[in-house]
Image (cartoon, rainbow, N blue to C red; front, side, top):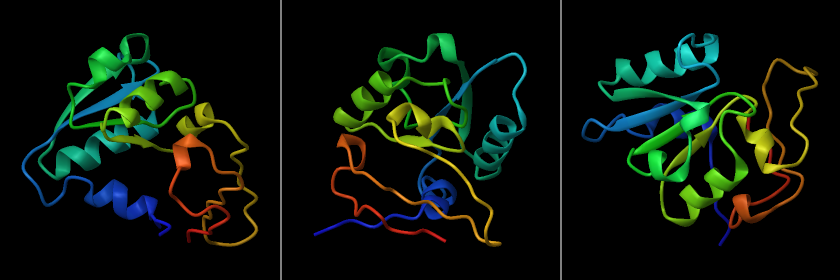
Length: 137
């Protein structure tokens, strides 16, 4: 059976109703977070989660496996190899904004409606088990 997912629900509820989680946010520059990295940090902290900022130069499997969830917002913050290793070993990873580009494919926005859509046009190991060509509004 195909699985369906909603990114918004995953982001907001990933640890909202459980014990305090230890979350790693992988940042391009850990000394100066950008707006999206800061927003992710603030949201998780508002739910009482412990947030650690990891510089992208230290974002390897051995570092990130020690966290309950690894979050990236920017392309280049985390590599495809690290993401695949985390997923293959049952670790939770959340790729937001442009960070999913490392997984391949074309990620773009056409702004043709007031809604944000995600369209998965090809399925790879990363999306194994998820329905492709499914719109999320």
